[in-house]
Every structure is written in C-alpha cells, then in structure tokens.
Length: 251
Image (tube, rainbow, N blue to C red; front, top):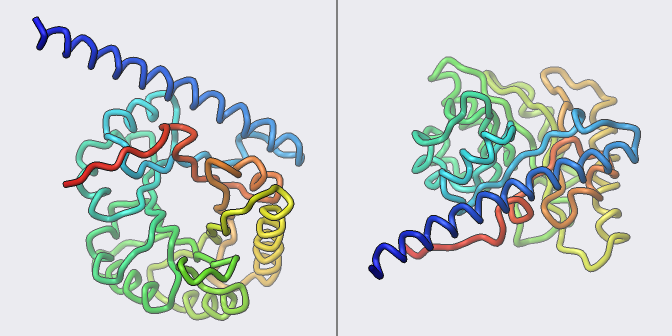
C-alpha cells in the first residue's frame, strides 16, 4: 500500500512539475514579446534558448513539445549523456558552457552551434575537427564584458583581433557574440554592461569582416533577459525561470 501511494505521489509531483514548466514557458514568451515590443521588435526577432543544465531529458522534451526551438547545454559530458534521448526534430541544440580543446571532437557535428569560443586555440581545434568531419561549425565568440578573472571569454579590447584570426580558419562560421556579465545589484549596473556589449556588437558588424556574420548577440539569462533584450540582445539563455532551481545530483 505504501509503495502504491508513493508512486501516486511521484506521478502527481511529476505532473505538477510539467504544469509549472508550461506556465513558465508561456510567461517567458509573453515577457520576451513585451520587451521586444518596447524597442520596436517582435517576439520573432528574439531567440528563446532554454539552458538545460541538470534538467532531466523528459522535462526538456516536454518543453520542446510546447514549442521550444532551442536548447543549450553547459557541459559536454551531460550533453552526450542526454543526446540520444533528445527530441531534436524541431529543436536545435547549442553548447553554451566552457569547452576544452580535448572535448571538441566529441561535440562537433552534434550541436548546431558552439556559443563559447573564447580563444584562437579553441577555434583552431574546432576548425581542424570540422574539416576532418567535412562539415561547417557555427560559433559565437564569447566576450568577458566585465573583465572577471573567474569567467572565460576574450576581452572587449581583443575580440576584433580574435575575429580576424578566426575568420581565416576553414569550416568555421562565426555568427555573432556571446557574453555573461557580472552579477549586478541593480538594473542601471546591468544595463551598463549590456549597452557596452551591444555597442561592441554594432561596431564589429559595421566593419563587415570576411567570413564573419554578426547575426546573434547572445546575452541575458533568467534574472535579466528582459533588460538584455531592451539593450539589443536577440538571443537569451533562460534556465531557472523555465525549469525552476537546478537540482544537483551527486554521482
């Protein structure tokens, strides 16, 4: 009897979790639409990418069934452990976390884009593996806009030089920039970083560097995606606002 009751409780808990994800999904879409409208854009101009770190595949696939078009994993190992179970027929997968060069061969060809390219060495390895696999890999260059030692990313001062170097590599297609700004205590502070990043994005776009297509400015997460959109972001990476607080499991 106790075992049956436990199963019923688990089913009810799972159903409530899915219902909460559904409510969150449509609320986020509404917020994106409002933020986009405030700067003369529409929701269709903004890519809503779900950050799926620690989220079970079943819940990810449920959010895809609601209409989610993009997911982003932080770690190669976690992505690969879920890869065969993802329902990616109508959804694209990105790698959004730090990528080590020795993991490149495991991920190239499996994701639609690598958002976290922060060095020439990493770009060269992606190019090499892409050539070996006879495919082209789309990437974003990660910028450490706050100059934080704890975060990866090239500096705002060196990003243009890096772009020129990467533009010469085979089988890589640069499609824009990505950033994770410092944690800020107020909107004025976060706008400062977002505006700086947007100006950098616009400046580089105006230079029309060969083999560099500045299509995407990926910035803004659960706590600040609306501010990011108002500052020029056209791709936001949202995790906890969609799926709830991360549940870490020790293995």
